[in-house]
Amino acid sequence: MIGPKAIIHLDRLIHNYHEIKNHVGDVPLVTVVKANGYGHGAVPVALALQKEGVNFFAVFTFEEAKELRDNGITGDILIFSRINHTFVEAAADLDITLILSQRIDIDILQDLFQRTHKRPKVHLKIDTGMTRLGVSYDDAEIFLSDLMYSPEIDCEGIYSHFATADEGDPYYAKWQFDRFNEILKIAEKMEFSFKYRHFSNSGAILNLPEAKLNLVRVGMLLYGAYPSDEVPHSLDLKPVMEFIAPIVTVRRVPKGTFISYGGKYKTDKETNIGVIQCGFADGFPRPWYMDGYIMYKGEKFKIAGRVCMDQLLVDFSDTNPLVGEDVLLMGEGKHGLLQAEEISKNIDSTPYVLFTAIGGRTERIFVNN
Image (tube, rainbow, N blue to C red; front, side, top):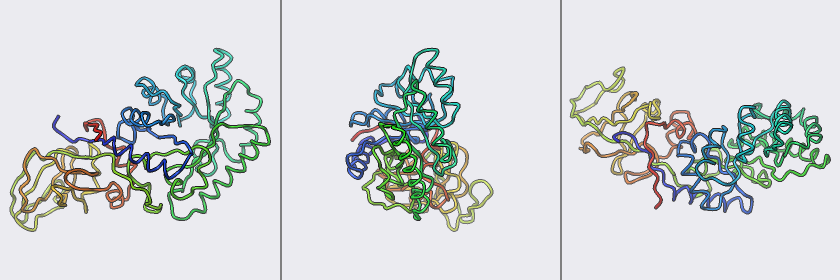
């Protein structure tokens, strides 16, 4: 297949996992593989982690969870999306863990039990300040009371989600954590004994170690990127994805030649312009053309003009690249290192967006060195 490729280095994934594991200590990790493993390939990533002893995974949709089960993942799988009657019974059959986030969720689970006597495991989500999914902080005590009188519900966990754990000012995150601890005290007085209590994510792992409780969720760090510049870069992370694409044409053009849509790039001397078969439809970030570059044989070369849907152009100056060779668009490989954090910082984005934008036209090749 001629086109962009994402080489997924599973050995680097495992390296990152052990870096994180050593950092958090004895607390188990929930490895987050939603959105196709942040664009890296959920099933191969999860299988590699399972071989290392990971037995708790998280995704967003039931379909993502079912895909893991169907492909040999045997540990716990937590779904972050809302409970829905269309899949709740199937989730119970597959031993997939759901979340409680609204009062109607209790009704759905009670109805399931009355019809089938099935009790899927659930985790209660508390909204401590993200203002997204979750039982609101103000309603949490009433919700816990309702849950206390619902023996048909197997609530094994309670958790929340930070809004600002990857930012430099810890005030809001600590405020959220304090609220969560208040709810835990209320639950304890009601004699709830949750098997799992979790709050910490990739940002909190580095910024708020006190939030690790007895389970830690980790996503971005696994894939070798930091969630922001405002967390300590204290782990030896390796970029798991090496994003490359082939040179399909090289042309020598004179000084003063306009390149790509809008003519925004004009050559300042006679130069070699290479056409790379990868565009924004493949996940290459269109705004990166302003100050962006690719790597080829250890050197940086400027992106020339606007990124097209299927192709991008590169000013190779007097270097003579060979048609058919690959260039490095992101990650680390034989051509050098181009961090996702650097790209995202320059285009006011995040590695989350860069990784998950790499779509189905990009061939994924899994290697383990």
